[in-house]
Image 1 (cartoon, rainbow, N blue to C red):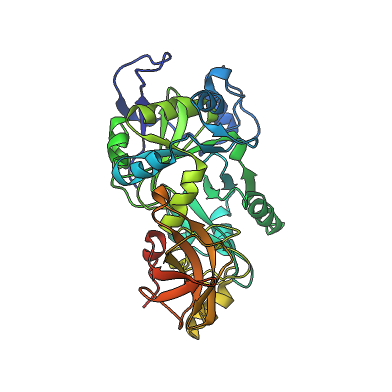
Image 2: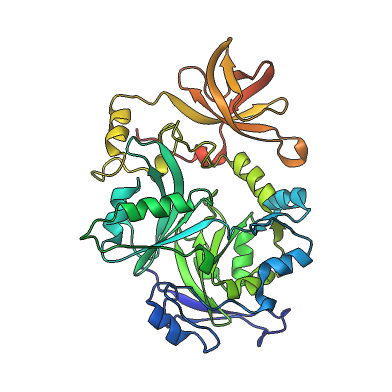
Length: 413
């Protein structure tokens, strides 16, 4: 296991910076993966430690990131989600030619701790947690007992806990479901730490350079899901490889008190801010399934083509019997694809081949500058595959295409 470091990041443009250089020093502690009592001893007296990790006292007003973003022109919804910075096209361009940073603090973060945490999640989701070690991570899927999809979760394996990142629409359902399956003898604790943390993701080809400029070069080049702990001006931050929709880029989990300084530092190194509207466009262009759209009780995990998050040989787990039968008897009837279309279509529209219904559209975006109309949809396996022509609705022409997220999912031979 690679050693962890603490990067004393400095931000010269900010009034509270005390240095103009950044250095790496040996990590004296692992910020997120300790008891609340230890966190309290480590933090300065200006913060109080509550029952949950990260539950610091509310940051002062000059650390209120949403207020700062609103003043800067961001359109923020009543529930605190940034819709746009009125720069959606610029942000999407940055994903291809530079770097974009997105505030995903509305996504759910669930902390699973206790001696039995690994075996518990091993049994409750599709990935093989028993082969993962501290500092590693990856994707897993929560499914129903019949392998119908609920959500994809990104997991970080920490020293004394596993942190899960889930969709905002499944956060409460998954938290409740996990608590429901804790039996009397299980040494497992489930904590929703969404409100006690902030989450940013960095996407685009210059993301590595930004990490290096922030003295975080030791995370660059590590495998997907790898993560390390640092501190920013004395406050803990965890940085992981990957950004939910891509194996490239980075995810940054931190205390809300550190959020504004981290956000400004990333922007200061050339990243373009992106709102949730552009993020949704990017999700569809990348082909990442979403709960309530591609991930529903109507489709199973293999029809969603989520092979990389499914273990076929780890033994019994929820949905395992159905998954095994689907593989053994070649029972996968449909598959999720991208569909390049000639004009806009509505989610729910039928997909037809030779006048016969073969599937339906689940998501749609007009793409960058309304010039890349693309849908996601399920299509029967024997009806069409990559390169084939289909009809959406009554008369919209479409072509079945691979999309990046789904293309990297490799079925077993």
